[in-house]
Length: 234
Image (cartoon, rainbow, N blue to C red; front, side):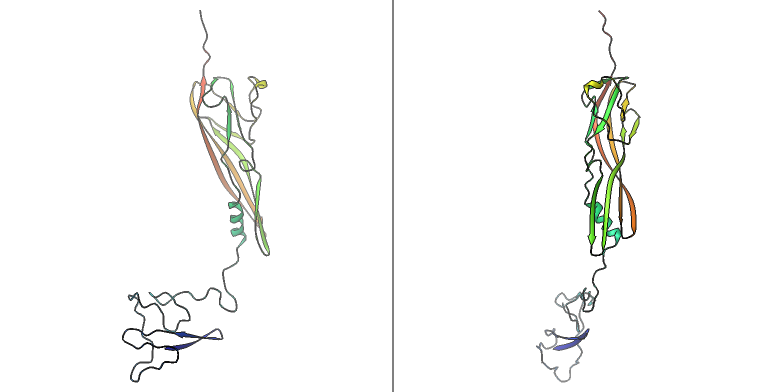
């Protein structure tokens, strides 16, 4: 049978094949005398009943209540992204690496109780910042900046050291001096596991709005040894 539907000013013709118990047809076919001219109802349990009478498109056969054209003539469509959406997109583009750490004495080497242990990490943009990324659509741009606020070192002996710098690499000329900005001294012998955690501040701005988020990245190093100096007697 042929069904004409008014779709926002345009006329669409839909050809519907015949259903069980009725007669098939093509555009221009007529309804036999003595039969109901209304289309047969769709049986939601019939897997072959895949069209909804009077629909301009094939909809959900189980309910005949599908979604119309998401972009009908005259407008509609998806909503434009908000500054929050673009801020999340920009933040996702910034790599936040776990810290690559260096301890002196390092894993497997034995330091002495009472002498300083130097702590530092590689201060790359991806591991320390600052790093930036931008997400934009016509008329709106949002820029996100990420940087480490501080790093905490859990030393394995109950101490936690917080540093606002990546630390200073140790060099032999330093001798037994303590680190100028990030270090620790063990007071008892033992073998320790050290955990270093960077604390990131992520800020985005755009569209008259700003937001601040937080993130952390962690690295764990084991077999950090502190020993006692043994006196030699003859």
